[in-house]
Image (tube, rainbow over all chains, first blue to last red):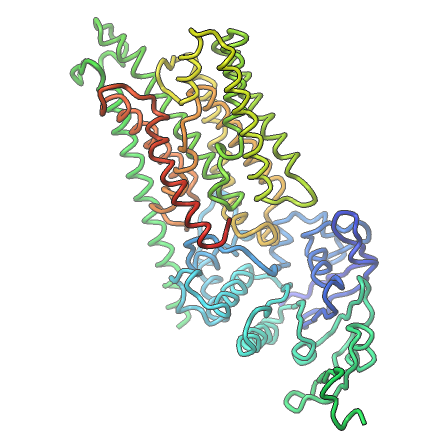
Length: 269
Length: 343
């Protein structure tokens, strides 16, 4: 179990001179699950990409164990920090085991072939994600939920202590969303993997996160435990939504119940 | 359960590896066979031992000239150009994740062609000057296309469209040059434009041989990186690939190979376009198909040249035959991409 300190200070980042992230400082909680929440376009995905060095910040510093990530060789960084992008591309005709195996790249040298360690890591990743039986299937034949588990397995085969996921549950049915989030929680509990992810669903965020980062317009507005951070005021502030926050009857975490203009019923009177 | 999964992983990998090795060896064997055929066949078929003795440097009346001066350079030109076209085509298609993205479509070939025709027809230059000018023009074309298609962020679709536009302009330049040229220059220019191994000379092959020997190892070493670039820019860089450096090294290597090969033999139609998909179909996707694609390129060029030389009453340049093979595949690909909504 690693305990890498990953932190960002006054990060400003964006695309083509358009600033999306406007001075965010944070420390990623070690061995915890953190979730970034915020409205569409608030910059959560951009922040995740900037942290993972996929886009270069305009200013500010991002460091791993006190060392600027820009100074760490890419392969070395990739052994500590993995990121699953929102829409990775599936090459035609590739099999599950082959794709998961590509996650081993940072651990391999350019000349040496596969080692038993690589095979073990791939097998382990496939077992954690419950896709061992699919090893020789083509990705094109899988359902959306299975496919997502394959991608996460690829990131797991990378065997990093820190794992970033950009909306890992988008486009999945609720059953698969829960399945993926349960598997990620397994990963965190069993191996102590530090997880940071962007999620769309605020209630699932509140349930699965140990720590919430709430963003609005490229700024970090609040952070902390879901039970402390997620309130009707914050939801109004972040999403511009009127709501009631009650206790989730299943998990005890905060549950956001939105108020629209209709169907407000007796509660509003 | 744990060991069983590892066994599965290893077994699947072994199986993919075995297929890759088998296919690569078979392709190499076919290539050897075709090379021998190129040396043995001709208007006169000499006995095998005479051909070998001529190659070994012994002087045999008639045989030595036919084998050493005509057939050997022709075979080597096909071998080297085929390998370069196949390899570079595969690199482009894989890196840009689009089967349409090959050096023909994105204009390298036309740039090289326009320069070569200009040098032959207007400047009456030959040999090294034509080669050098074609290579420079090919590289310049790529640079122009790249700059024009850069936009706010890199997009493959825009690159291909700009490439098609530039290609059309350069083709117009070529047509104009042919129109104003003297009657006696036209056949040579046309033969070159169709892609031909005819009249290849040993000393003209040196640049191509050097380029192939230098850039092939670079491409092979970067093969693993290329397999990750295939998963998308972000996945590749989060796996520790320096995507910019890798892309520039791969583009530079394949563009140089293509341009030098085109300068030597003319644009042999569709080889760079067909080789990668054929190699992938045969060898699977588990391992880098850089070498198999090169070998498929060799086999396509040599087989097409043998067909062009001997299958018909007239002799056709190799590019005509590969064009006949490639055009239906292009149509098939367009129909399939259209159905899948990728166009």
